[in-house]
Image (tube, rainbow, N blue to C red; front, side, top):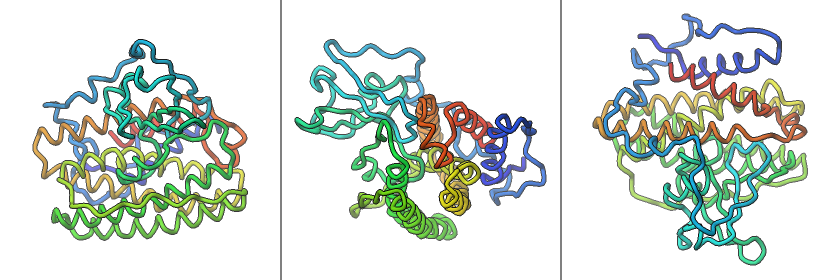
Length: 360
């Protein structure tokens, strides 16, 4: 079966999500003349290995609709009332009573399921001392591809009432952090004897992210803020292929793919003309990065065992579930208007449309 390119699917998803606001309707089926991505007959579902139901693991089993009971004596406060694509922060009255591992930032998924949301596998503990107390950031957070050390080092929450400059400065820092992620990915692809063009595309993506970081930093300075230095990745040995595939499923096939759609949306809706122009340029690159993620998924899937493919598919579904919950929070309309970010209902529509078009 012929499949459509990720770029086409992203653009189609954005059109569908935007149509109600314009009083229009858009056909749900992509044009059969759409560009083929070059992966032959592989569908996107095949690329993620979602056809393998064997040993999917515990990630999906933890997804539930009702909040799980907190440990006795544990009190959480401070969930944000702003659209938080990079996650949110909770304050803990007592980390011991809340059963967090105080010796580690990254918490076990069983802790995150209880203290954040059911099915949320990612959360991070921070002791801010007398000034801020104990906090937990929920959600792996941040659209776009990040390496694991950057996720551990970054405070994944966003300010409850961020300014335009704050958002742009954070975007610049995240773009800069993506450079290392793509550099490492290129080296690991070569280590596992992936096609040379995949590694070359990863290196090109790293160069793209350098340019994106500079663009966002310039915009942030126009709005009175400067980007902080991004966490750097220390040298490490190449990881296993299944570890790379799991990260690619979460970072590339979920966060980066949605990030490309979000950039496309911003390129059409930002009221700040400089932001709009920048996001149009960035969106073209991010669509290529999303294409790369799905190409890597298809290549890796053909080399993994059925059990490994099931682990990758479970991680992918868990990342989708976590991202979808984050889209339900109310947004700051003034900031969103300048940056072209969608209101929560449009963000959910965009996510649903993208998920349908990319997973079909």
